[in-house]
Length: 214
Ligand code: B16
Ligand code: MG
Image (tube, rainbow, N blue to C red; front, top):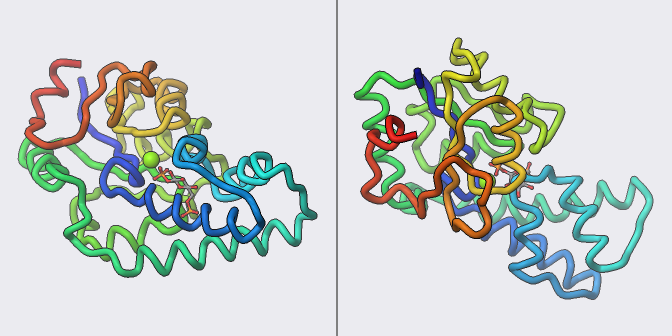
């Protein structure tokens, strides 16, 4: 029986993917190459350093470790500038209503994000209060598709993995949920999120009944 829901953050609760994209694009342009929205799909749900590796591969560039850390920091500073201006208006449609319904129906709620900036976003959007457990990039050592982030989420909720479902927008996140032995609802396009148990476009007009339909 499903007793808890674990939410990815970027692309599920808020659209920070667009800010990651802007910051990575700015870095790519500064390094002298183009970075498209299609390229950005490959970075969703992927850790900061792995994202940089992918970006440099696209630009056909290689750097030593020290330079790579500086580049990642530069991108992160831009990203933090963008997200520091966020407020409640950037919560994706229907998310707050869905979280409230889950609470009213006794489900436990966790965040399962590999972002080290997750807490700033939850605070700026006033969403922290909904979560019984918050697992972010500061609590995990392995990024998605490794299941660590979701397994820790279940553990902090005091639930078994099979009692949790995951909401995810990234291919890497869907794989992570599967490897954690959890059902997964893809949030986004059916063509991209083929391996999810169910795909929804977003949370607008979505009720807790979808949990029973899984
Ligand atoms: P940061 P999620 C992920 O968050 C993003 O999807 C991914 O694009 C990003 O590189 C990663 O967090 C790390 O984020 O640089 O802020 O630590 O989708 O797991 O909520
Ligand atoms: Mg995501």
